[in-house]
Length: 258
Ligand code: ADP
Image 1: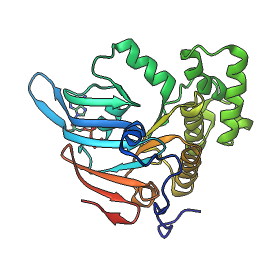
Image 2: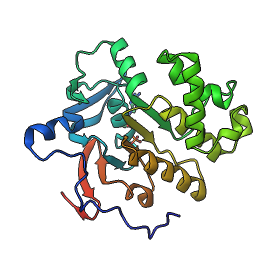
Image 3: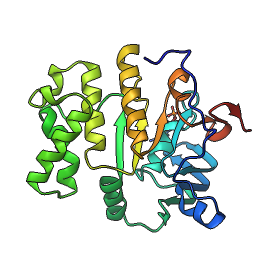
């Protein structure tokens, strides 16, 4: 069980899949933001939600993002998840420049390569558990027989096979979030984005969801997670701290880098 005293994971041993020379290191980059700013403009006011963000995430890395309310965490995740485009700067997604991608192409990258987990689960109330988990596969046009197999597998991973025919309202919060995790991973995304995935859960269920995320990371998925809970974010390999739309600090497992 994870508690406040859980040790941060060690980064002493290099990840086995991280190449050593500079050129290969570039290809090990999953996500790269260069001088990214995002301004929300409404009739009366402009808000600089992201202010010159410069960051990258390695393939297979687990990064946590912390910061006070309004500091830009959700905006950063929505840029990483190709839901929002930066106002300026560049974003490379698994080696591909995203600036010129058409809306449909961005949607395709999302459905094929990104799984999202939200604080409030976002399950569809009049679909069963299995139907909720199947949704991303329908968008990705996976054949019906394969869909059934993959849904069963994803529900197995999160321990919810026995609730496949239930509806979200018949489940506890912890169970709903398990289903949401299954939905996020059923299409085997390269990137998992989680926005305060334990925020609406008690500590026991929060720990269970964290254990699932760590297990998915151990299988090779790149994970970016916004968290208010330092006990959870320090289980990531790296924590980025946001303040007023800027990255002000970064910690790597056992030390502060800047
Ligand atoms: P956090 O997730 O850290 O709480 P957000 O990314 O939600 O922060 O918001 C960053 C800033 O951008 C805040 O000042 C917020 O009010 C503003 N903001 C967020 N979404 C919008 C929007 N759709 N329109 C205008 N301003 C927004």
